[in-house]
Length: 247
Image (cartoon, rainbow, N blue to C red; front, side):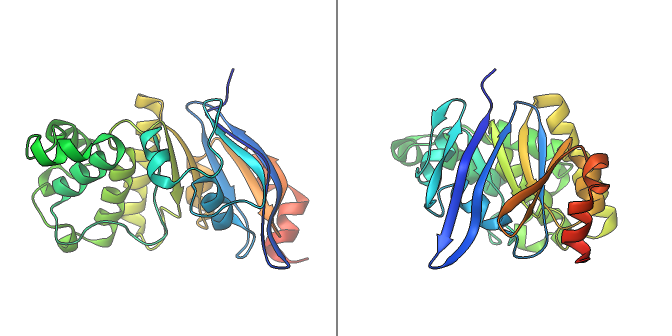
């Protein structure tokens, strides 16, 4: 079976600094893969190479068997690949619903459609469904800037999954979210994975969050994969313990 995402021998150097070193892994349909590691281990650089924000020094990336190495983020969006960032990417002066419609246009809208199509670009019903799914329906017409930080994180995740994204990369979704909202975010991500077979890869520092959400983990240290397995296996791996604790 072809993997949803295939990363092969991916490397990225900045001058003499090797940030990512020969990283290879697959992600299959319906899987939740977590990418963890100490600060400076290469997690964000790896994401940026996969998603076209950075050009890898070596290696390849394929989505559904098609090589996409070097494609721009906008091109990947049209192939059903999206992401969230460590810093929120919501538009604070737009309503929650307008944010989702705009995100949907990035995936499948055209310039002509934006000029001559319906005001909601034909995405209003889908935006409403996504708002309800992420428990934001009562806030549909609230400007995003007036939402709490946790609610904005939910909206950010909803935007990534808008228009049926087949692969979503989440960059620290738990960052800065209070424990009450965090439980809701984790539950909604697990639900969209379960109900829509959504496939995603998660970078996260909150170990409790990632261990509870992900079905499989890879661990980076100094740009290399040092461990891979289930959360239980990874938690007990001596190489992981050493990388995090330094002894």
